[in-house]
Image: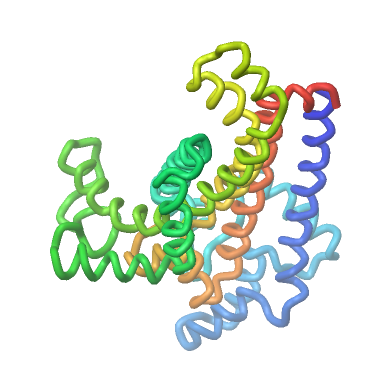
Length: 325
């Protein structure tokens, strides 16, 4: 428990630091979102409107420390300001439109890649020297050398354009209205296959090779020899003794990957015009939408911290040594 409380304290400090940097960086840059928005709509807005815009975006003439506490108050209430590109929509509302699609795409891909890759690493190492151990790691490492977006474009061209087996763009058919119907869910699934497959192919090799390396070390330990000498079944030794301990490094990587899920697979989402966080971030950069960029960066940072804390909790259950800290 002391270990978890200590880690929670460190993550709270990191969260406070990220909030503070998120506040300071835009104010250290020349100009402000209100000026950028006023310049874009020159001739359509009255000059006095710029003061109202600055107030709406939190760039007032108040002392910096007062602005900071106002910013913290608004953030804790879930108010991240107004989006420039989607004005007058709130940043939280804009982020919410892409959050679900990002969790669906990146979350599904990460879970599949981690589960299948780790399982393949366990089986391949347990049967060292077999065809699975000899051929699969180099093949997956080769595929993992290609970036997501290249695999996404190849998959899109072959399976979407040439064969016509999957849709080319978006998260669901343009002719459908979002609803909990079999037709809509089937369309979402069909649109999910290609972008998720590109992410899985690019990352599964890393999980397998990482698990294989940890398993090689674990299989040399005395307790594995003892478990086999006691006559325990091969499956029990492989999963309850070897895989459980070898899984710890991969769990750490999984926590990091799960945290970055909320950032979206930026280039993959661009290739498929998938309306996730990565797609929103590109739009925010193109439109100089600083509040939206701040909101997305803050969401990613807090998600990474939360995911790492969950990994620490998992460590306590997976590794008894962590309970004694």
